[in-house]
Length: 149
Image (cartoon, rainbow, N blue to C red; front, side, top):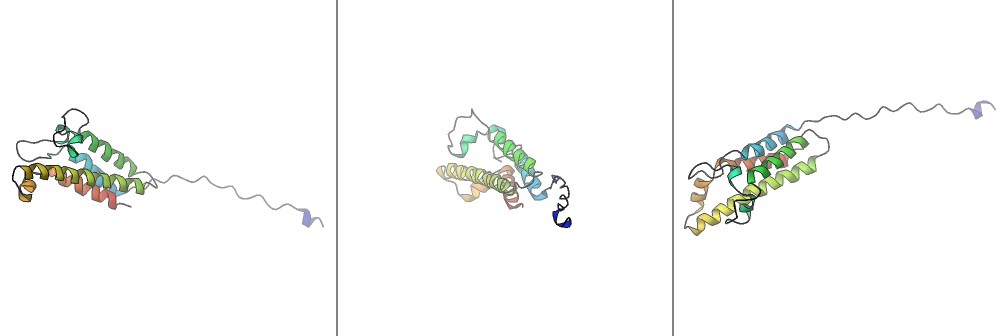
């Protein structure tokens, strides 16, 4: 009868879950490319114009006032945030959204350049000649960031 009244043994102590830092190299490379693009030329003709010479508003208004937030600053913030998230667990969705945003920024820039060249009677070949390395690097960085797990 005494055996029936015995209490079960206490549960084993549970160790706290350790926060494992998981590095996402593809996301790191993509994010670094986005940051780098802020310092690269966006327009290859007529001198080097990096992202800090272009207003962010240019992406939706070609005649935007040069005052205000720079495209370069936005890219550094976007890429820097994505780089920080490359070390954080369970941030895949946010990194993919940031990568998609970088692709949209690069595409909007190309569209605005194409619209300006088209008004002057140019064609797609002229747009490709006019684009600097930054548009391509931003596009590639955004794709890498969006493709990371």
